[in-house]
Image (tube, rainbow, N blue to C red):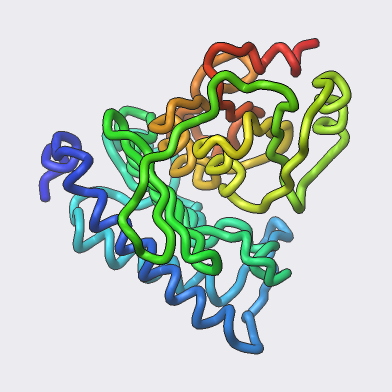
Length: 274
């Protein structure tokens, strides 16, 4: 398909294929998850890599090549694509084949497959599949956000607005730091919900949490799919200057610090600038 075809193709026509592809990657992950050997290695940045990361990557890259052969794919497992190559991309797939590798290794079920379509530096379609939970979150610009359990038809999800006390805060299960404790100390009455991977965004998208502050490193493939879901559900993912996260705008692959939030009528960033 020519590049112009994918950039103009209605998002709702792409979604079923992407959803099935995420589930296929989930099946590849689950096959390894059920076995005794996770095939754990250590990457150059000291982060873990498993056989499931590689297997899911291969499934997704092959599937996207069939779905949209002219559209480039940028995956965590192909992260070394030079900026000079990426810079002119009008649209591309941004993929984390296994988000939450630490949760996968701990076998707590809180890991996901993330696939996003980025157009004009914005994530416009996203699928977040949680294989161990048999759960999907997905959404696209102008079409709303949905949750599906065990392959059932999706039901619409929305952020909670207004966010009444006690505020529900989503926090990382494996990356909690003192910065989150500082925010919680200023917040007042609240409930902390600890969760791994991009599921924290999804908790906000379905109204089970009100905001998720991330004052630590994430890469672009960690956030794009879940950002698309959350924005489609009525929420936002903003950097500390109040601007939506954008993708493939520079050589750097790390995101700025951000807040993912529900209720649009509340100034969540004020909690960070206090």
